[in-house]
Each structure stands twice: as C-alpha cells, then as structure tokens.
Image 1 (spheres, rainbow, N blue to C red):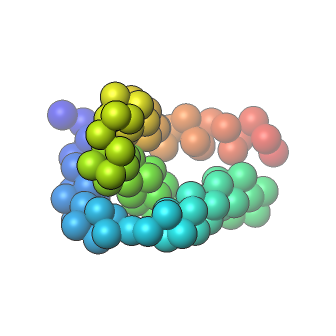
Image 2 (cartoon, helix red, strand yellow):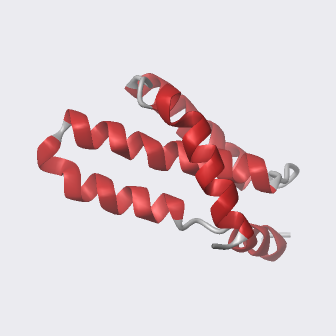
Length: 98
C-alpha cells in the first residue's frame, strides 16, 4: 500500500460519517469548491487538501448507492474513479497549464 493509499484511507475513515449525512446541496458546494480550486491558476492544493476533496466526493457515492439502490453500480464506479485520482496527475496538469 502506497503512502497516498494510506492517506486516502485515513481521510475516508475520518470523513465517512459526516459525508454520509451530506445533502445534495452540501455535495454540490463541495464539488464546485473543488472544481474551482483545482482549476485555479493561482492556487495549488496540498496533497492532503486534494485528497480530502476527492475522497469526500468518492464517499458521497456510498450515500447515493444507499439512496438509489438501482444506481449502485454507477455509484461504485464513480467511487472508484474518485479514489483513483492522483495528486501527481493534478500537479502535472497544473504544470502544463502554466
């Protein structure tokens, strides 16, 4: 298990309970905040901040799977996608947009 995987797991465990209680409005706020910060030309997220956003977004998929059982497979796919986000890829994308 990589250091990033350990960090992601810790963030998941620390935030799971609160994220499972998010409303759609809470999620939208989180998602748009992350999108704005990720796309900012002046701001660089720390590794912990980046993974806190991506793991919270992934965790919300757990909530959606419970609320919409017929969409469980889609929610699981989305969760995996967000868990697989890489800080190194984020840094590379920032470097290429300078």
